[in-house]
Length: 369
Image 1: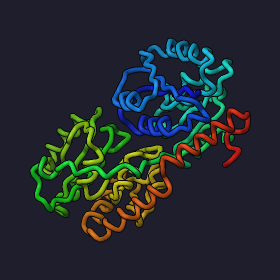
Image 2: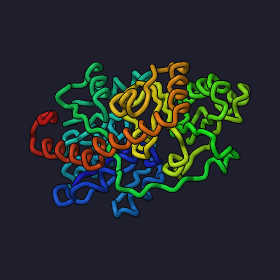
Image 3: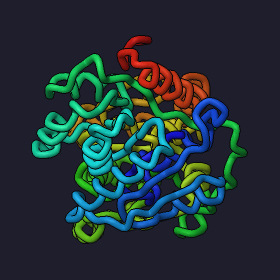
């Protein structure tokens, strides 16, 4: 039996990846998975419960990590678990320390490059000795981790996977909801309104395109610390009629069914699930070439990549796709083919299961890479 440990269970890329992994895991080989959450509950916790997965809510906090270590350590010493696999920074630290000396191997998931967070990088280096292996969501993240002192032999790339067998979601009716013309173009952003995701860069790109493509509307689904400032800056720039902040939405697949293209202007990434979901939905992608974006988006074929933190180049990429419906259609079709051919849930689960077998068999984590 495997214990999966995660910091929280709100909807996000890591949480979605965890859900896909535990609900597709081969239970005959690895038993019934159990998920433990450090703090909060969240929508993904309800998804797991509905799927019949046991969820343990530890009721901890960032300030109470030592208590969380003790609680997880008790779980590992109960004899129920053969392995612990953690997701997100705080869970990785807790999981590694808790597993030390228990005889239960620990695997951590490195899902993003912790840019501008040197303390986190230091803590990763100090605690990696207690991890039998670390999964990296992209080759870019693996290289970045090696450059920062983590041992290459412990790092294994296990990219995200998408379930392309789900029925297509019906459109959300965004144009009607926002009072837009039927032929209005929609560039959709889905993500946390945080500096990492670059919504301010998207606002800059929208201002640059206001006169050039007056029928193009930017729709942002998500919430976060930049929400208030973003709304104020959009109002000051006079772009609000074309720049729509929806807040947090639970109908992202339906929003994608309404959109003409997907935009992700992130400053740093691991391998964004949102881009993978957009590709599976048949949307062309305009994205900053950061992290694993370049491993998903084939520049000029499934979308267009722009230089990181370059609003002008991002605006050009958006304009090229939005102004050419035939190009957008070709890119969208190529993106769906790539996502559903190379980045499936089945491949993601298989990669993790093979790693589990190697770790439980005492082999090097990268033996098959």
